[in-house]
Image (tube, rainbow, N blue to C red; front, top):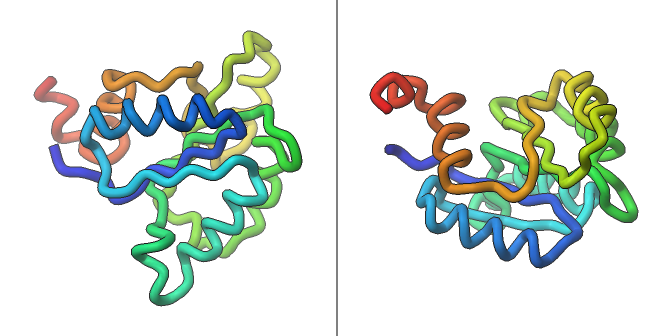
Length: 145
């Protein structure tokens, strides 16, 4: 399967970020994995990814795994600000909200944002990652599996 370019992890829990980096590396689905610890850092990253000569340091994410509960700027606050960004920065980016929350209101609220593609529970697994990549980036592979 072809690789996507970049996955951006947005989570204040460093243990989750380390674990998810291991899983993404094991799945071998992308060229770059980047991690930030809150919504503000994620917005700054996305803006920098659109600047000339930043493709190595700030590769444009294909998938953003966004945690809901973070200090400073949480996932929902990030989405409110993300909606205001230039369309070129947002084009073809999947946002998948991640949570450990069992609150069904979080899922409902997340899916009210057109920018949110899916809502998944932590942790990411190799299998879920492969399915997500096939479904959204290489649907021709989905029929084979």
